[in-house]
Image (cartoon, rainbow, N blue to C red; front, side, top):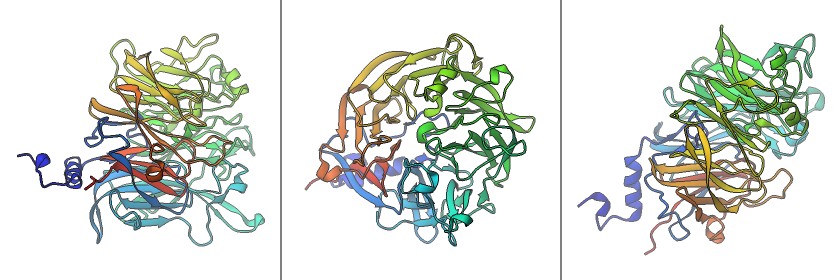
Length: 529
């Protein structure tokens, strides 16, 4: 008799056994991997057959001290000093705290908690940023990243020191925390500082300096080839600001490279709607910029509304290739940021374009771009793209890829499924529902090429009232088949107040979603006696 069919084992015991079978599960970065495909492929517990209002629902809520915009991260089998081995969920908040929770255990007692509010430091008040998008305070917004080899959690945090207007100091710091206890490593934290030559907005004496108040990090941190990459945009387009990317050594925290994508202009922010900049196996980094002047094709250095390919060239972080839509000037003038979305890298494709990046913005358009020959800029048309696909609305975030299918949820539209073949898209199907207020970034759970589920969390619109977040699940093989929503049994399953652009984390039979001052945890419900 197999263990799973033993008559004396409860459903809970079976689930615990299933967890043991996949104890190597991990979610060390936003959207599962550096390619940002958003698909967790080792899910053996949740299937389209058991994700329904009768068997699946909210298990518990993790209360924390601030809003949770960053996607929760997960590592299995972490040895916590004095507390044994745990599968750990890492949660970062806008109150500048990082929590490590047992992913399935006591929701009221974290395994450890680290706060970056030392001495008189506070999170940055909403009013100081002149932006109400993240309120009432701004601390940790971008999703951290974990180096599983060294057991290090990298976090970018914002703080304010001083209570008098004349003495305010704003700081952004990169922290490196031990995943076992939250203690700082490598002599951290390191202060984020940079300056480049330029005559752009806010420049002085021929230099553009990084402004820790105006620069707002939203895109997730990236760890690639021993380097941690950080990127910035702004808060509500309050200037002066620029698009920055910085690189730090993952074992020394020494700054390795800096690039400003609008040194002689303004804007060019790297927003990504809380998704992440991406990287390929060779260590090339891909980031999409938002509004701002584009003049790189005319000998300039400004890359507004452009998908950038970055790497180290002669020891300096530099643009090695790029793709810019032919109507970049129009996108800029109409506030149709390309960089409202984050890039995704498809698995290797057969045919003439084996390496394809997918990016969508407010346009509304999806661009399929050959990463080996990105095409730069071409006046008059987008023929330098592999393909362009119109969308119903803008894309705020990214897409998810699973088993030759691309799942897209644009603003004001239903979820759409596209077949992927030879690096191009063909429309396949649509769901029968749309989310309130805004687009969202889908996530997929599957057991390899079977039992696929597409998960989404409703996102608060920029000017909509506070509303409950809603978790949706659909069958990835037939997205017209909605499996579950957290409002079908709201008394049991209702989530916390929704924020903007939250991405669910699905791993080991559980779904974790960030909300206002909490993380809601969903899974299979205990069997009824």
